[in-house]
Image (cartoon, rainbow, N blue to C red):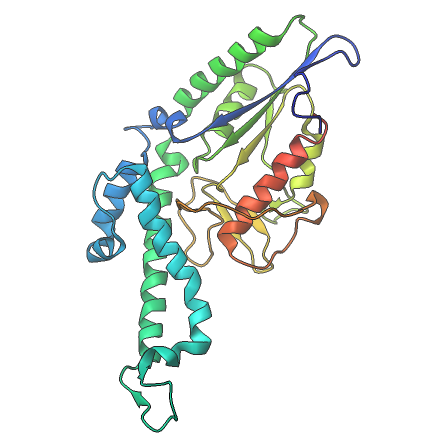
Length: 311
């Protein structure tokens, strides 16, 4: 990986070659909807409020709320959900009064176990609604692949034509996006089908043997430094990504309905999306301990490091 001030042009080999990372957020996909624009956070908040009912009020979600307030409200809920498992060993502290002293006046005034069970049950139900709604908003059934193809091909052509000084100059493109939809991959697939079969997207998943779902293997992105191979990194996960029992991530078709038996590998909107500094060598990126949503971000950070290893 080069120094931060390294030039994007290089004289190595024959001709020049350029490397460009394209970073996109929700605004890049909203116009690519099939029958209506893909949801921004304000529209997503409105949809969630309709589905959650009174639970939305408890969470502080309101229709058409702006992105910052939506992230703050959902982030509060996510932190509460993450804390519940740590409450279990000491739940009795929440059901007693006058606990400090000689112990003779300790009284149980609340059934803390029942509270914990109800809280856990409601948290799981709310989280499932959020995931289900997310899939409904951003599944490939909602994406107009033709619009995606035209938009991204125009962008790719603009970059290539701006940087290429010779027909033989390779241009290495990398997409990094915070979007859950897979519009970029669909666009690249259509470009490969219609224009250049050598153009392919690479998302860091591989099938190790026939019949098995593609598994997360970010080290495969190290070989993506090739004209025509376009890595697509979903920094918050993508529709169709799920955690497996061993803690790794598998990928399924993004037009499938959500599988309620599995946990989506997604980093939900949260105003505290921060991960402490960590060394995560790509070749060691396997099962992790800790919160699964943070693991998604760590794995994708690792993927970026893999992709840029030769830059």
